[in-house]
Length: 175
Image (cartoon, rainbow, N blue to C red; front, side, top):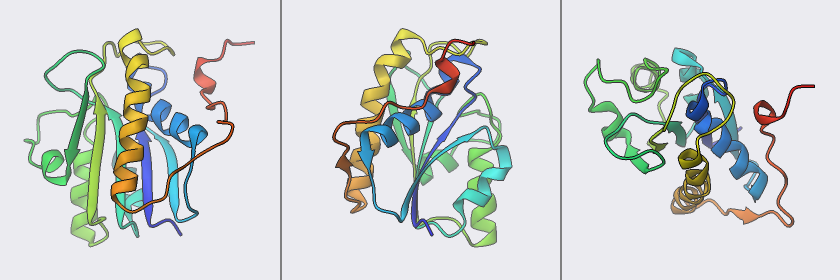
């Protein structure tokens, strides 16, 4: 059973909202982690996200975030930074979900002790299966931050030799 998870959140059909799944899959292709660490592309789970949290000691979410700044800028939030937002302010285009799932998990007594959000400010959340140039440039930065956060949690992160190609199926041409 996983004790730590990296969870990418986002809709791969809405431009830069695919940042979470893209970063999670890119991280997983570049690095190996122990069996008790799970890397998940959760899509847009809404309140179902609570089920992913049960039994974890720590979680690192990756998502596009609504924040002040330019497209492609990285933001990192801890539990307090996520929960201290008012109920109306959306952190991402698919809220409610993350904040409410954390609160729900806390109410049930199953919330991880450590909750982090590695976020990237999107350039566009328009319909389409491609990241903007700013978001694409932020992917390696976000992957490096996920790696650093896992290492800070004591997780050994080993580069894959050679790295695998990330399975970004939504970016492949149809046919």
